[in-house]
Length: 198
Image 1 (cartoon, helix red, strand yellow):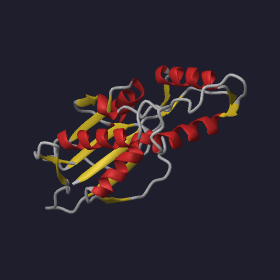
Image 2 (cartoon, rainbow, N blue to C red):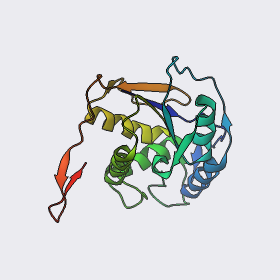
Image 3 (tube, helix red, strand yellow):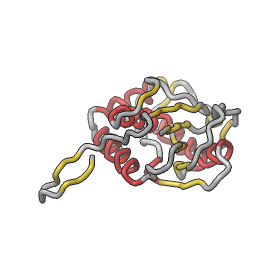
């Protein structure tokens, strides 16, 4: 079985280098509605049986370019929000600092972020629990940081593939599990003693 991960095309949304927290927040909102810069994606001649896409327009646009069949749109595939880690208008910080520190705050479960590492991993596992595992080749079109978390989870489920530290736009990443084998879902019990997959 193969799972293909594609990050949406690059978004055409330039930004200033030095920004206040409010300017970073405004840019983030503008980014959500900006158009994309299309590029050719090498799909390696694989016949993809099914395609899932984030419901955000930049991902849907990309999915339509790389897959010709019916696309299943799912909110679970939305990007992890990156909010300002502090709120101040007294000074500006470089854009990469806002971006990096927001993700650091996500990792340490800071209340500054709408979603933290635990929430994201649960969302990824929820998505994997309800996809069609009877298909041989599953294509997923989503967003950079969420795909990074997808790769972590695929390794956890027994898939093999490339370790990626920076997910590039409009590029296919392929992960495989040997024929005849199934993903390894861990079993845990909830507070009532009922078994659930994790």
